[in-house]
Length: 120
Image 1 (tube, rainbow, N blue to C red):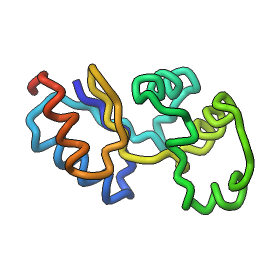
Image 2: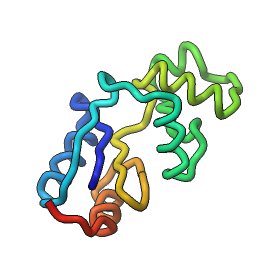
Image 3: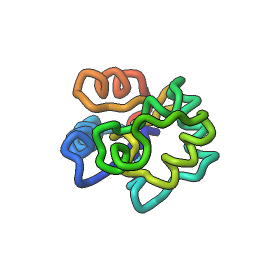
Image 4: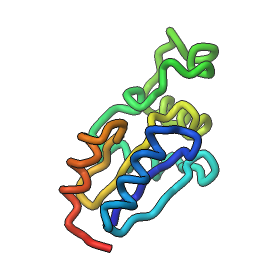
């Protein structure tokens, strides 16, 4: 099963969703701006991605520039910040049984789609 954490207003997210739909693999869509992460689910996703929370921050986002730029936070604090401000999260995040990645380009998404052997 593939899960895409999707923002329908983002062209990269729409492109990834389209590619997943065309892959004929079983998937579900989570619109993370309305179906919000909990700290627990977000932490589990980060573990699967094998990255620190700060690596998922959209650092060109006006909210980041206004409130967080130049400040230092612990991982647990970044998790709270990102869960409270999901616009700051890089997208789309694609989760499979074996991994989770930010699939901002076709090549990265292809790796995940090939990795997932489950069919629709």
